[in-house]
Length: 189
Image 1 (tube, rainbow, N blue to C red):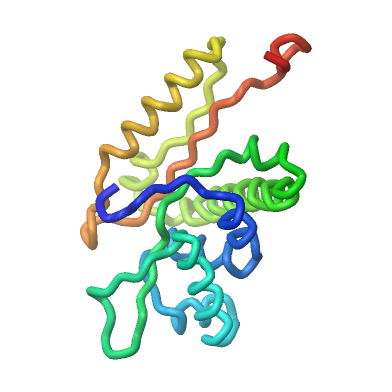
Image 2 (image 1 turned 90 degrees about the vertical axis):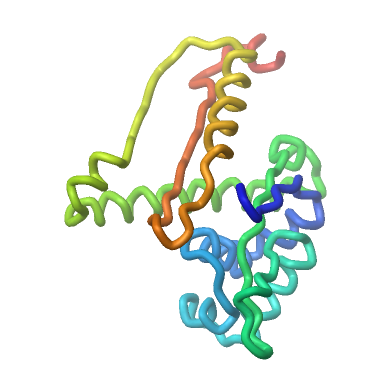
């Protein structure tokens, strides 16, 4: 990912991130790219003071960063910074469990909304974009080690793609791989 720093989210960042306005601002920056507080305020129907405040809070935790090359005068541009989160650890910690659940619910909601929007847009999309898009669902029998390897290899593949800049369209990639049901001793170990 050129220009993006992917960092591990800590407990304070998690708690700061899970404010609904901050989660929505981050989603918009991911979906549409860099923007100003004013641009984002229009998208979420809030005032610029609200979006500026929440962007500064996200920046304080390294979740968004300024894009100085786009700035003109006092105008500040922001972009989403990549992060990872050990949600399992956060969900098991009483101090962060609620925030971790909010994060997980937000991810599910976001993925559902993005897929539903694509289903609607695909009705009028060009045949080339329809053929380029993919929806794959496979059932495999894998060990924990092979599942972990699959995740690493997919992440390496995703990391190998650079943004096409203005030449490409914004694309979202959802990748989930998890066991469908674990029996008692498998669930614990």
